[in-house]
Image 1 (cartoon, rainbow, N blue to C red):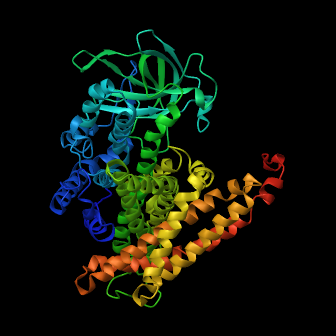
Image 2 (image 1 turned 30 degrees about the horizontal axis):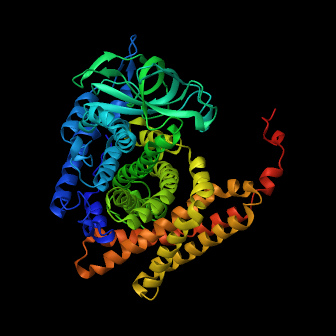
Image 3 (image 1 turned 120 degrees about the vertical axis):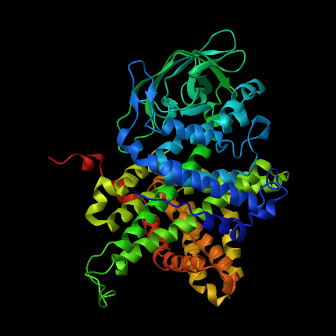
Length: 598
């Protein structure tokens, strides 16, 4: 059975020494998050993941979910008990508002737990994760009555949540949504329509499921401006706030899919179901973006999490599997063969994955810290700066982390050779589970277009200008430090490539938007490499600052960082070349050129 050990020590180091987490004690909830509390929380969370969730991962993959004739869905054996234990432990409400039963701790800690839970059991982690996204929507946009009824139940985990956007004819283009909302005359709406690909749409884990549904009020205009967001519970709350009468919403089918078998991906049918408007009429998409942005960061972390667990198992296998001899001569001549970890290509594979994982974790934690500042800081300027950075990083984290995460699970599978293709090792499940992260919550091509088309020019380019300034200042701060030269020089070259790509878009994409479209994915990855390189400079500086007292694990991390900067960062030049190639050749080909061959 695959194993997993949450990287608690690495997280504690990144929080304290790289990101300055404890310097934010003036923010609400941070004063309570002392070093001993943070360590205790994360070690207990890690224990739960190792002991409760890891053993259920293969169970969920083998059994999947079962839909009964009445439309109810049963989750795999053990999921129900694990969910109840997870909720009882307060993990869902870790960063929740204390006014609604949450613990009020920093969102950063919730982000860490999201990584741990996903590595341990991605299909399971999606259930409470979606509930947290619904909490965010209600907290920001719900009225006081909605908050009073629903937030305590969602924060405690007694009730779960979903988001319902996609329809057969309306994926990315949500303006094509046909679901209707008819005013009932009593302040509620009758919701009718069908949604597909709804994660956790029906299950037996919680007493109620709160669906967030995009629909069009009768008479509203076509397109996205006519969409509104509605809260539609599986069971209508009684006067005492408990789940009461069954609402007219059912699971019509379970999707048969490549991975995450333990999560119920449903076709949801709404047949005049009672719903309540969230926010303003016609502003549903804007309201839903609160949920989408949170979900996209979580999905990015899923990419990192799958990369981490795949790497851990591949590294263990590489130290145990004996095959052939080292190229320079037998490393262990007394044995019949050497462990495959002696081979340079195996080391390259594992070191590149590990180098990504450490930097990606730092970047994800940095983004979560920005989210805390944006939500909790009393300083308007600090909130604005955090929101700018978070808006810029969200498509990068979602797109780059999941592209690289899937690539890394495949690379880890390759370390296993033929046994990696066999279900017994478990690594093939990591590949199948990781694949969805590149697709849902907005495909990665959409993330790239969002970055180039919306985030770069937003507010006159304020966020990207600040990013360039921050990275440039970091380079200047350390450019004379010989010990950091192997980290700073590649980052400086990458920053120059990113700035050139940005200027090229400004000069060429305004007149021909196809240039931006053709180069968007490469730009997203170029940006991601620079952001990861920035993290490695900060990580390396923090490790070197410890001097001789740096633990052996951190000194090893420094070596993984050098591999990343030597072997992965040079991709920035490749990305720049692709971007500046433009779209002319692509768009000059007639559509018929892509027709199926006879």
